[in-house]
Length: 402
Ligand code: SF4
Image (cartoon, rainbow, N blue to C red; front, side, top):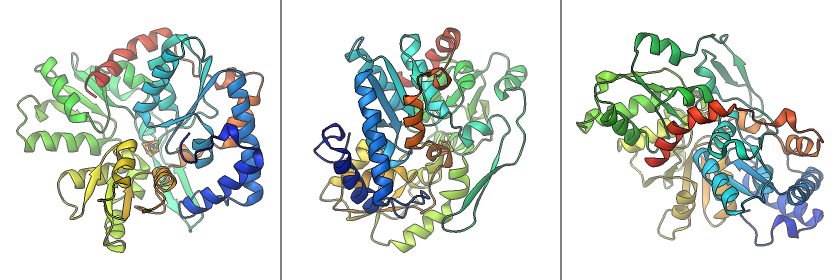
């Protein structure tokens, strides 16, 4: 738990409702969550959260969630993290409390649940209240979304193309036998299973270099985020990296709709114009912030800028020598975290529309209903032992280069 000194387990339902009413109305009103945190609603949420925590304590459950999910879920769970952090934290906690944690419940998108399951292996069940997708992962299967904002409150996201049946990696392997695949963390379990290594936004360059060093002369397929992959190649070219041969690398043309249609270069320029004294913080977590990541790395933003993961962002924001106003270039969930933990500074989302519908699809009610259900089988992440075994080396190579 982050935030107040009294933990959620020590508060009465009414105290929790009052705390959340004040907190959420201070921190998320402009984040386009399509919900009003009225006193009555906060009381409902507090009742559900208290019951979820009671069941978690009674059954020794570990509740995890991602920073992009709704704030009330973040405040209910034991640990909130980014996609890599969730897997690592789950492993650490499960190992440290050997035998005590009986199951993990994760609120996030499906590929994150798969990663936690791969890291934890067969020993412990992993459940999700909802198996939400991700537009970047869906683009691997030829599925593209069209996002539209109709008004301040109303947005829509619709499917544009039907999925294709053959996995793009299989198609590529037919033309490139003996090649190797590197997949971004934000990919499906099939990609991870077929990959030589997985990478994150932060270690993409390092993993590509390592892969080309270890597999000289082999063709490489990077996927699914075309912006991140092309950016890494551009950096390698600019630095004359002796190991990376861009002519041997093929890039899959996938994208995240939040990145492509929401946190665009235009939105960033607009935010910089509106807040001339603000610093810029970029979290390289998802496809959504890659645009900003690229411009910052190229030195194109004439402002104090900082790229870092959540804990580093919080430490940067807390420092007395960093600007009082800060634009946050990533999904709106991080704005909530920063406003919660650093109340003396002002944080602006790069656009009030920087929300991922897939991450917001899980509601506290879903977690509550799922955990209260006597039969959890429909919520379990089921991966075969072979899939876990095959996917783990790629994850291990990512961790070795973290
Ligand atoms: S922000 Fe983009 S990459 Fe991240 S979960 Fe949402 S759709 Fe996927």
